[in-house]
Length: 261
Image 1 (cartoon, rainbow, N blue to C red):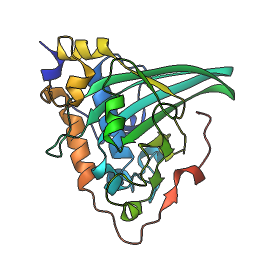
Image 2 (image 1 turned 45 degrees about the vertical axis):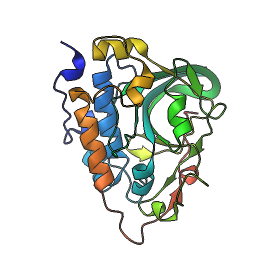
Image 3 (image 1 turned 180 degrees about the horizontal axis):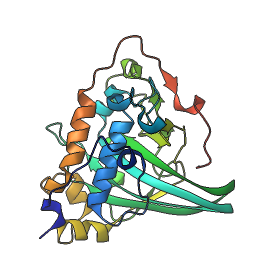
Image 4 (image 1 turned 60 degrees about the vertical axis):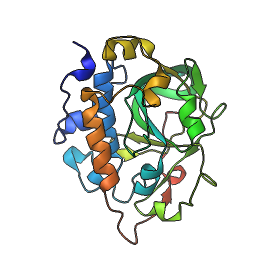
């Protein structure tokens, strides 16, 4: 039986499951669960939670209007570790917006790289990349790799529950992608610029039970799998959140520094 038609659940009340994510997931089903928790952690749905001291800070969330207008979303959990010469690797998924406003079947992605830095130890960070243009979605639909910042423009996304009020109609003035990063319950303002992201054809085949092109997944050719329902439910919850008046609007770049670059 294909893994895509199996039941898949998350426990929103489990602090461990919500905040401790495996960057080396070997199944797309596990990436679905990570992505569902990540989008709930980074939006208004958890902005007042402080379970085990790991709740997100109030007024620091992905603006709901930006999320509602995104053409697609990419999720990554990335680990960086080493001593001076640091390696980083992670896994995740990408989904695209359907014409009816829903989301497509997920496609598995991964990243790996090496860079220099003053790092002793390691860090795990969750990322949400808002794909704001159709070109950005198409960049994830090929068989090759996409490099954020080089092939596809990238910017740190604005945060704050009322930031979407300044969003202009159309794609004008909006970066091709907005990156949001989250570590230990806090937004950390870390860019993924220069990161190489590749499709995981092997993970997609394992999940769907047969070879499948990323383009067919993100173009809506493949029906939505049952096992991706936790992510669809989380996205519906996040997009339904109401942005209150007089919310604080900030830039991620002004938030705390991180060792992950």
